Amino acid sequence: MSLDFSFMAKYWEMFLYGAWVTLQLSFFGVLLGTIFGIFLALMKISKVWVLRALSSTYIEIIRGTPMLVQVFIIYFGLVPFGLELTKFQAGIAALTINSAAYMAEVFRAGINAIDKGQAEAARSLGMSHGMTLRHIILPQAFRNMLPAIGNEFIIIVKDSSLVSTIGAAEIMYTARTVQGAAFKPLEPLLVAAAMYFVLTFTLSKLLSALERRLQKR
Amino acid sequence: MIRVSGLRKSYGKNEILKGIDTEITKGEVVVVIGPSGSGKSTFLRCINRLEEPTGGQIWFEGQELTEKQSDLNRIRQRMGMVFQQFNLFPHMSVMENLTLAPRKLKNQSKDQAKKIALELLKSVGLEDKASAYPDSLSGGQKQRIAIARALAMEPAMILFDEPTSALDPEMVGEVLDVMKRLAKNGMTMVIVTHEMGFAREVGDRLIFMDGGVIVEEGDPRAIFENPQHPRTKDFLSKVL
Image 1 (tube, rainbow over the protein chains, first blue to last red):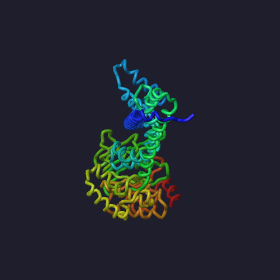
Image 2: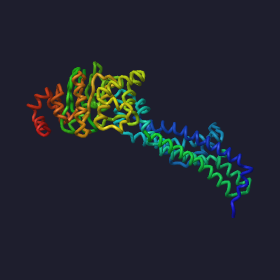
Image 3: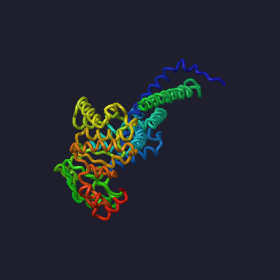
Image 4: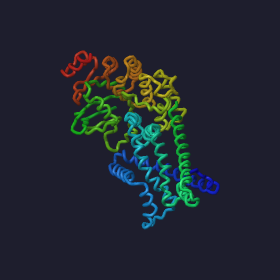
């Protein structure tokens, strides 16, 4: 049996569009997931127990349920409540909700790993809690967390393939479509795999370059 | 300048401070000594509320800082602190360590803050380290930078929490020299230390703490030569 990629002549544009959709899904998933993740982490280390409880509950529920179920709930399940999202919006929402929970744990661990003396020194100079976080704790935590954040980014890119199940035309969805249209069971999937790999590999190279730059000096 | 009245601190059932009363006047150098676990560091850390007192009151420059509504951040700007572990910010250069708080909290311009910082670095003998990062400094250098960082906020007093305890012996002198100079220039200082020679030479007043209370206080020379309380005698006989 030999591989035949001749269908690409006809479908390459579709794949390219799929890659563009995957990129957008991942980008917004990473961006919004990071922002919400930071808030969740700050809630979880807050002195107010209600915030801590809310954050913990959220994180446990999201981590404890499959993302596929979350995607379906957001896209199909919320319609009766008047929330009708496009496939793309639902995809971003699911990725954000999911990655925020994981990011929160990464951030929390990163913040807790910073020596208590750092916050004490900042507070003893008269800096507020917020200033201390922004200028002293988070910059140091961020540097330590970069490998874990990179890991999470890559997971988000790969998890975005689950959004194909609600019909968002990203890489995986395109591969399934082409499988049927070109009567090829394997090759379109190989193309999809290669595209995901290029995306994640580039991302991981970019992140290690950033890591090296921060490590220097 | 500072008045402490009935200060108490406990962790759960464990009472560390059992009612501290004292007063510190402007320009005074108060040295606090005592065995480990006597509560001396906790006492110091209660003064700027890094530890939350569980009882009693502290007044600083006429304000009660143990009050719930007191503007703690503002008060702390007037009350520097130097730590045993230096706690320099490792992600910032020495210059940034010194200028961050004055720029953010006192609205100093970058140039203004830098000028003051350079003066301070000169005064601790480290003007050539402005662009260095803390990791590249020795312990003694770090602690001198930490003192300069506290001074950059132009505080009315500085709290020293065992400033030389984490240093290699050969670096203790350079830090104590800086502190001596500060004392001579009239800075109000409260110093928790194990350096008995320094306490005797520089202290205006000595406080001996044990078991969460002030056991004895007064002129350092007098106490070193002729301690009144048996516990003071016992402690001094072990450390001198």
